[in-house]
Length: 159
Image 1 (cartoon, one colour):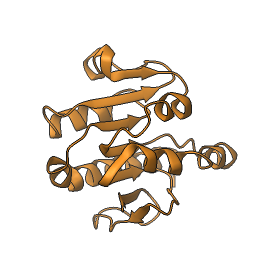
Image 2: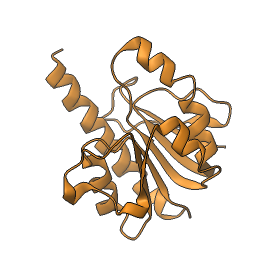
Image 3: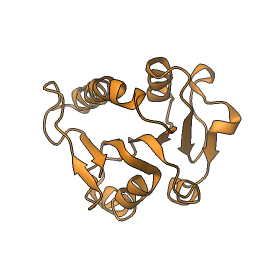
């Protein structure tokens, strides 16, 4: 599969998962944590589907289009592992993490801290959606929408 086709599959999976969990998120209190703002497309999608919900984005820097950039008070700049951990127990309704690189060694390093961070940030019953698997005892896998191939994206609820 070409890298373009792989990218398209990933963003379709991401969109379909976020759309599928939007109703669940509406019934949960707490902000949304967007781990990895990137160019801001997912942030913009979440903002559209969860109007009025606080969305806090974390990234090393801001490279997003100005229309897809959070307000300064909702943009945390620095190493995600450090800045998000410093937020403590955020009690987030949703944690979305699309910070995989496709490089096995780099992603393996990220997986040494990302599952714990997602579990820490979520409230009880909150949902984590991630491009990388989140193996953590407090996170129970959820079924994926039919349009999402197993292993393409991952979905969990904090128990």
